[in-house]
Length: 114
Image (cartoon, rainbow, N blue to C red; front, side, top):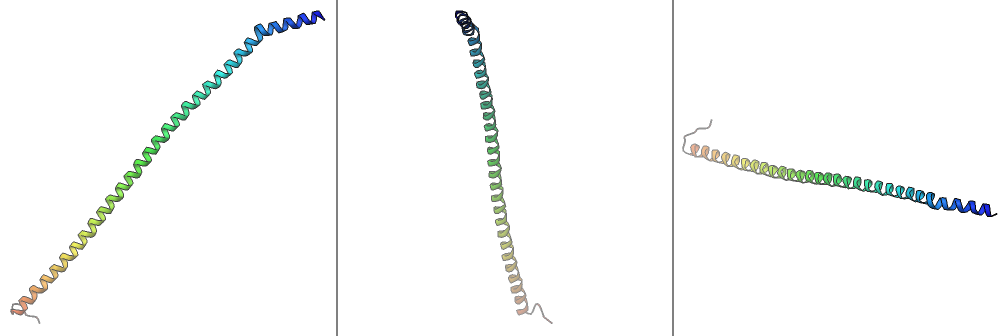
């Protein structure tokens, strides 16, 4: 029984001297790999966040450009409506002036109607 005890003590000492530090080194290496992969994932997420924020800025810029174009279209439409109204007023005034001129000529016998 003392041989088994000495043998088990030898196995225990060899594990403590060689196996345990080797196992500890493996665990430490595994932990470092996990930390490194988490750091890589964090960098990728930061890059993705930057790309998404840039895309958001572009979308907002496009929306602002669309609003400005819509405002320009509304202003041009208003100018068109006002110019059409002015043309109509000028046409009515011109017709009225022509009518008054014809009446004046007819009253003074300068134009005869058949």
